[in-house]
Image (tube, helix red, strand yellow):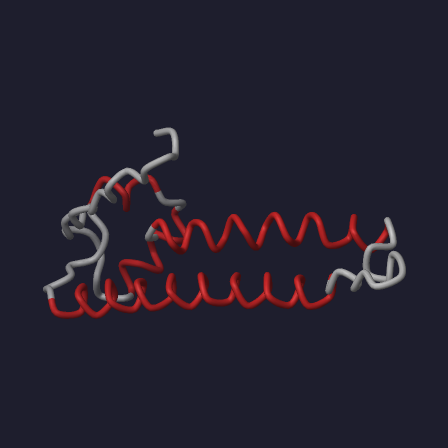
Length: 118
């Protein structure tokens, strides 16, 4: 995830935590003469939009990775991983025709985000 998406997810989490508190404290009603109410429900809907945006970006990245794997000759899971599976799953994998012998895909390391502890 990019730092922008992480910030969106963090913002959505904060809003989702604060919206019920604001509603319970009565901030969604007009607090006084000439003071507009806080749009608590609208804030919650904006948080939902942010969560869905982050989810969409994650699914798009997953699809890119799947398309890349389809282009490679994927031989199934490595034998070491296959051996760690329960017997029923080992049978299922071997019946799929991709039983063992694959290589562990190269994992990509994200650059550390500025401002976040590692």
